[in-house]
Image (cartoon, rainbow, N blue to C red; front, side, top):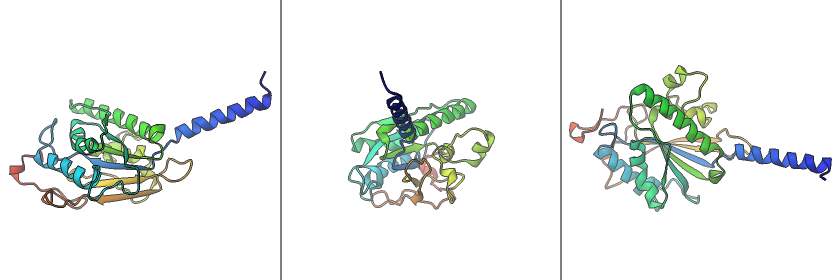
Length: 236
């Protein structure tokens, strides 16, 4: 029969295990938007070029300006829509990794937005609590309004529906409240380093700037509108 002391110790250890699991935060989360679109289902040529450029220069294995320098590389690539899946697949494939989908298909706006809310919440919960990603780097290619959008957040003040909220970026100063609709060419790099805390310790916004043969890809400043020729046949 267990002594009272042994039972108390077991309870403490169980509580610590639950706490550790609940705070199994990654070391780094890299967030980016999908590429330029042709229609609700596919990227246009510019978006496809961006997908390949990201793999070659920033996110793929052996990338020229790798965002994984000094780490073991990415533990996972996450996507939510067909556009984000298409964008991130070349980079994930270079590492021999699948893309983990929290999938939402195009639908009527109300249903689409509701599904994006739910899948974003599920994905963020997994990223912040799954032990397999604890202390590692996770890449999230996402729909821009569900990265950050103060109007979307204001519609449901009691509900957290954007990555800005769900990754606790809203607790840091200097993090934009909205991801502008005209910007496809930035990374948000979020780091967690405080023991026992799920609040980020560092945030950086990094502009994508590409070398040949991708130097003609749009690289507009934050908040400015991307301008493409009509011949690009991308959605405006």
